[in-house]
Image 1 (cartoon, rainbow, N blue to C red):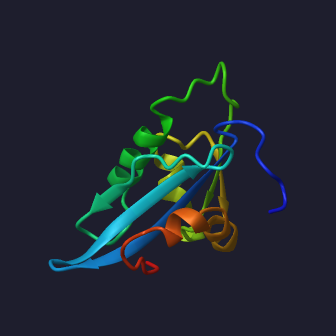
Image 2: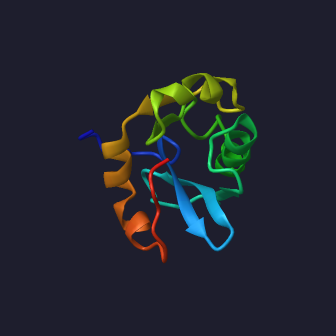
Length: 124
């Protein structure tokens, strides 16, 4: 993806992974605005799998300050999630927005954020 975002909320990158803790694996969802590189509040869940509740929690964090009057009417969410999550994403509170499934672009865009994590983040 060679295109550089020119507005806040034009592209939002979402990366999902699992982290090994003393209590076992946990799910970690991270999101970052492509223009400002602002990292939205992350979501942790004890079950290392994607559910509608977990996605809605992440999208509430992302859309908290979103105003369609000022921001693009449709956000492009670029995600490392697999295409199998498409139906869950479309049923989420962000279902009217656009989803692009591209792990390489997501990891590249979020490289600085991911490299700064004080723990190892593993693929789902």
